[in-house]
Image (cartoon, rainbow, N blue to C red; front, side, top):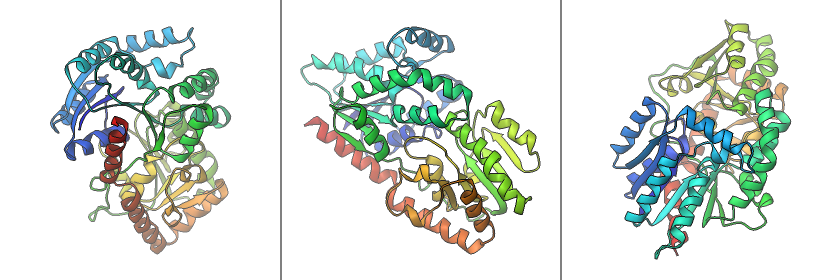
Length: 403
């Protein structure tokens, strides 16, 4: 198929879902054109890497001033900030030209931030002789995420933002779900959330995230550090901030009371001051790394991956990546609602801080249990989260939307 992908940010290893969808679709023989926005030279290099895979790139810069203008324009309107944040007229113009000169079989647009482009493309293709189906990948229900954040975020900035954005996000997201030929989400919870706010909606399909099983894999030469825990993710994300604070403030004191030698690695780009302060308070026990060249080095060497997410939406990629590396996982009940049946043997699930610390201590004391749980996690992702299988399912969704 000839596919147009509109992604309002550059697909990279941090943006796991679009990065792997475009790569694996290209590997499966589909012709891809990627329209996107870049902000840094590092992102431009990432686009060059995708271009080397045979993916055609149509890109425009998204400057800080443009983003500020988008926010200022959205504030007095009824539109949520997320729906306007990544608007770039230069990219919109390129898209209009593109659909005039190309016959695409399907158009795939990602996220609420990309939805304005999807609406533009819908208007431009409606009058064409050959209407092109548009699949909107909502990824998560932002309404569902904001509802949780309003109640449970430990970030003041996050609470203020969600209180302001929630009502209009709920209205707009519910309306969007009825505007396109097909809608995708990553979990049944997100599908139910969208259905609840959109009485009339397009077909909504759960397309889970996968994991690159070749890239994230156990490393035979790596030595597990028996007292090291890892928590990974993009640390500027408000749900990860809340999780990191909960981990260090509520869970780790219970672990350190019995094993003061245990070290915690908080790994991921852009940690805010409140996360960096955790290392300052516990310099011998907590390491906040910031951006790292390769997340696998930490996942493959930690004894246990800890995922104490208090709230969130969609699938937690950090869980899948740790499992793929055969690293045993302790997680909160919040994260497993998006997993497939069979996860029960692949992770230890805790309902509160006391139970979470108990599971961590149990694993640290039992190397054979760590090995057993790590192997079960690897089998789980091989069975349920192989990108090759997921993109084949996605191709069938495109075919159905075309008819």
